[in-house]
Length: 211
Image (cartoon, rainbow, N blue to C red; front, side):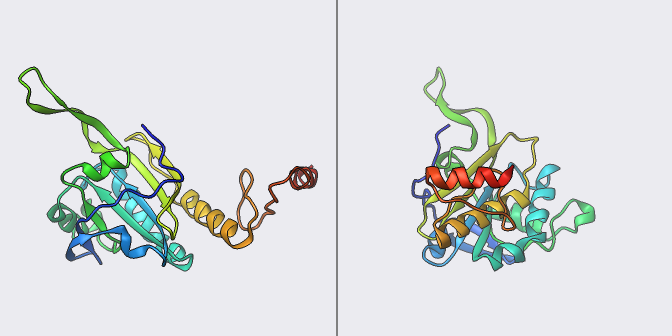
């Protein structure tokens, strides 16, 4: 599994559901270049168990991402019809009604493959036919893409392991702070803490203040 850090985010143009109930064709992250950072995250499947907790948690913090000029976009290998049904199912019945950021339909699994999060691979069997080996869903991958379309942060969890939305927000803050101030963000940094200059003197001063 390769890292995409420092590389241009793989492009795609696929169907999606936006605003909780609208089908759109040719949805792309290109629309955000020059305007917003993007938190683009994959989840395994609609109508499952850990996945709704993550999608609802991102919705609960959506205003905080938006206040940081950051869009949130989710993606799974489900169809747009499955996404629509899940988005319009009440939460007490296993749905995610109220989520209104885009859900991309990666039916071909090529978006997940290009981002390095597909939990398996296509291969040829002994009859020279294409088969899938592994689990044909995406791992819980998350990518922070800057306004130039470059991936600056990625994290990939195994299927049972839900992610921290607060950590995703912290990374957005770190990226924005670095780009605005030129300083770098040390371990466990958040907006209430000092950053440091990337010099020997800067790190020495920072560490001295931590004692």
